[in-house]
Length: 210
Image (cartoon, rainbow, N blue to C red; front, top):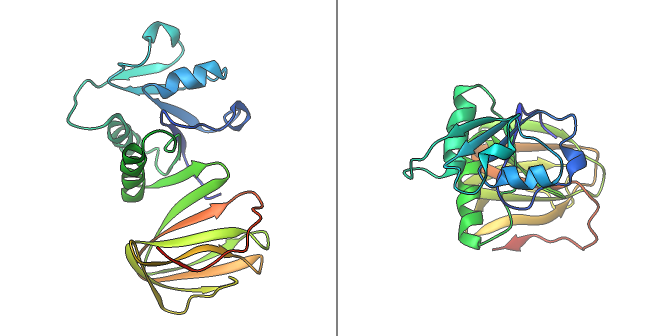
């Protein structure tokens, strides 16, 4: 996993408590604080309009009340992280719930220095032009999506991409596989959402037009 300076928890599906023990600075977005408390985890900071929590439960946390409805609590939290130099952040709890809410969360993730974490899935935004080297276990499942457009080349994947145009919606590399421990991804132009599975997934894999 790429380095990060904080963990930002939204009110969706969170990893189990063992993930948070001894980890980086934990920021909870409103109702996510209750879920963390139920796991025995006290967030360092709680941010939002606070319409979903009881502040008396969090005497050990810094509570930042931002009642404005001009921004979502997620965006308010991103602004806080920027001001306090806590980016990049690992975002948990962005999935789960209604699809429009999930898409809105992903939109904010793509626009900022965020790593998307929804076990077993880890997502990174890669912006070109750049050549990046990664070390993965062989046969790791990986998807590459243009957001919204990109041109990329790869080395070390089962289905290689050679100056391939990716576009969402449109043609993307979905459910690809690594065939080497060291892979290279060259973003010639645009930006790519790279989704990596941290656990072994049994399927055939494919290049898909979505």
